[in-house]
Amino acid sequence: MSLINKKGLPISNGIAIAHIHHLSNVETIILDKEGKGVEYEETRLKEAIEQAKNELQTLIRQSKDRLGEDQAMIFTAQAMTLDDPTLQKSIWHKIRDKGFNAPFAFRLAMSEMMDLLSVTDNLYIRERINDLKDISSRVIRILTNDTEKKMEFIDDVILVTDELTPSETMNLDTKHIKGIITAIGSNTSHSAILANHLGIPAVSGVDIKTLPDHELAIIDGKTGDIFVDPDIKTLTEYKRKQSELLSLKLQFQNYRFNDAYTKDHHRVKVYANIGEPNDLEHAKNSGAEGIGLLRTENQYMQTNTFPKEDELFKFYHHIALGFKDADVVIRTLDIGGDKNLSYLNNRNELNPFLGNRAIRYSLQYPTLFKTQLKAILRANTNHNVQIMFPMIATIEEFRKAKELVLEAQQELESKGIHTNLPKIGIMVEIPSAALFIEEFAKVVDFVSIGTNDLIQYLFAADRTNDHVAYLYQPYHPIVLKTIKNMIDCCHKHGIIVSVCGEMASRIESALILVGFGIDELSMNANSIAEIKYKLSLVNFSDLQELTNNLLDQTSNDEVYKVIHQFAKKLL
Ligand code: PEP
Ligand code: MG
Image (tube, rainbow, N blue to C red; front, side, top):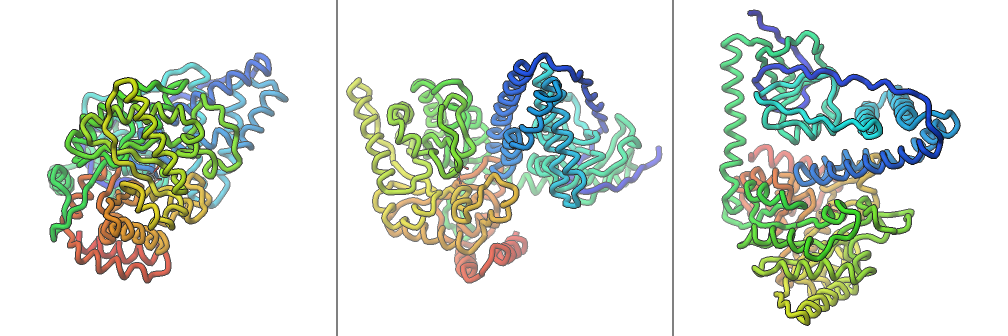
């Protein structure tokens, strides 16, 4: 047997050894043009778009908890595309003026949008075509009543296909799909980013027709090398490389149940961010020492009406009992911004991220808010629950919200239900709260810094808008100074301060936060093992010295360079 050696584009790191499995291309559905009346076509398209948005919300939640905030953004951007006014105008024109039916009009409008993007020289923009294909096939599938296809395998395979959309990548059977080879795709595509986070080695830019189905193959996602039917020498060499990589991963994994300490024995608690009942086991198996952020929006988004107190209680109590000996921080409803409830007749806002969201909404509807608060209070049977209010801007908001907690407790008491009052804290995500931390620290029980929103508001740059993504600057000295000041103030007043935004889960930013003296880091469960392990290799005293010097830099990139060098040398 001859050895075929190919070189593709390295897309996602790692080595895979398995048999090739060609994924037959999904045939493009032939669509009729003819519409059955404007009203009928418009209605079914509107319904299909709503369903597509709901499906995307599920993917957003799943990817946020499984892979992290940045990865979830891929699907947030897709959902926003469905509301794009230019796209809408183009679709309605095709239905109203040309008499086309909904699927035909939608697909045509999407392909015109793709044609526009395909002529640009900007690789980043061209790569969004794959996202448009993803959106298009989702809506067409819904309109043609097709079911979402799941790929399931019995044996391990290297999946070979023309191209994978982000949704397909997110739904891959990670147990058996050991590697991916595609004809199309680059390392900045959204599918590549997801493959990377899912830990699946991938290579693209390959003439896939020359890859024989069912043949044994090796792919090296770091170099782009592909070996089909490898000789024994190559196979042995790659098995050795593979087991080296695996043992590094295992080293992280083996460490995951240890309490997190730096090398010189400085303690930092490492918690998980979760949002669904099913996340409990994953968080525990990943080594979470507690729950630093329980996002409660999902339960409200999965139904057509506000969930009942008992339904909420069941979820909160399940998590509180699951982490019996540890903190479980439950964040009250954080809707608005990019997270809307279909049944909420909130008026359209020009600036939803600056509008009626999170605690503002809860304060406006105290009865609804108290339903949630009662469920949280009842879940605190084990004295380990804490209540956290999102998007607090002023001390008055905090006071009012806390009063409602006390009212809710009294109402329960009057029904004979005794509850234990949890610690009550805030998320600091708004600059007014960050800058007024000295006063907040006197009245709250704890502070958790939501860096995702804090950065968005510090730079006045919508975190869901690709065009201003360059302003998401977690290493900018002003972000670091703001955080350091909050940590110092909270400690001066004897309260615990944590970070539950993405900065906690990246090793470089986590090292900075630890150097600043953060007490707790809360992150997606997948990052816990690596962060705990790497923290055990560094001295707190070295981090303190290093981070002090970082504050003198003048840009995000300068800081990143220094901390990246440090992390690379040390780890
Ligand atoms: C944050 O803003 O950093 C945060 C953790 O909250 P969310 O990402 O849910 O807005
Ligand atoms: Mg937030």
